[in-house]
Length: 613
Image (spheres, rainbow, N blue to C red):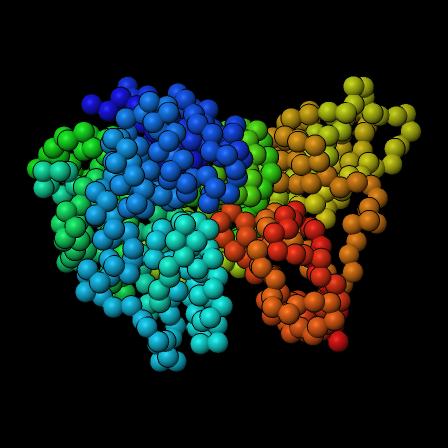
């Protein structure tokens, strides 16, 4: 029997594994980088071990340090979670060689399938060697790992070299393996996968299908089970192929076989030899705990001859600290509050007051709804997200709500090009025009201990706010009867709750303040000073850091005085394990270059200046 498990991961997956271990009466050990010293996963585990450093390459990708941590803490098993070393056969062998139990597939199965190039060879599928014009578009893809890192779509031969360089760098940073390959890119297919579970006695369960078509940068955003709209024949085909792939490598444990479905055909993509981020939707539909099953299998238990019967429909949305309207740029800062109403499931690695840093994936949480039917599950999840309190960095919450209600998605006609087609509409600001007034009234009541009215008519009070990128001015005045605002009747106002009557309807506004950051219901505002700060002005053509991160590369030969063309890549920032290009905003001359490789930058920091010619 397993008595103590070290979780070789971080964030929400580590917290999720710890939760199941505690339910089973198993002690837990966390590992944490210096950046994660106070992270939730390190706090909820029974014990924790420090991995010195911040970057993944120095911490969560150091298998030798993790094995030492497990031995030092007295663990008798290691669970790899997903990402990092979860598909690293060398790490699995090191765990087993140290006398520890590995809660995952055998190293030889990982070796056969974890490399996407070897997996395709095993399934009889070729990758591309010398790419020609007739092969386009193609996909450059990391051979190890997943999560959209080390992946680039190439539509012009001239862009292939740069895509290979960037993909290799991302893959090496995220997975410790810079191998990439090139394959044909199937436009606008559906991403369908099959969850499998296999024991050491030859039983393989195909636990239904999932649809993961809504993706950005090849990283999944919304997933559901079962995959809607598949014909019975195609559903049976992908499940049979998944079982075939598992049996081909004598697979043990939980794994996922992924396909791209287009024109009624299923194209094999890869087999992920680990638990997936989206596993909760399968758990909800089949009524099982996949982590508990992984542990039982590692202990030698048999699976039943047949899997449990599927019931209902489940949908999961990934809540990211990112701005979809600004090229999905990751966001950092203090997560003041994260609260999602019942009846949904919330898997997260953060609690109120935690800091969202630059070193790791920007996912804050997974929110999962389960219901008897797909429409009910979509409605439940969209409503819960809409009413959730997410106070802190900008997130994709509004995008998720709109996606779940989009007619193309509700009709199950989505594909992997969904966001390419609909992103502008899904990110169009729709702020509540009365939110600034509610914020100003609550602020006025919070600052005033006495009535503000006078015997003579008073001038309107004004306060300015930034909302959805636009500046708004709220105007109100104090009277004998209380607070008044043009066109709106103030029914009630205190520091935390404002009720306004608009067109005969009373609307409630809950107001929460964190310094200059204000939340009115789910609308975020920034209180502006009365007079702008002239030191924040920048010259035209200034390139400012759109996110916190590290300058990892500057274009060859780039220096002050050289000509540049609009859209030309000038430098690359790495933030949250992804690389982001900073390009020339216009054709002209680079007059100033402030960024150097290795430099840490904060949002708004000046990187370079381009003057138009």
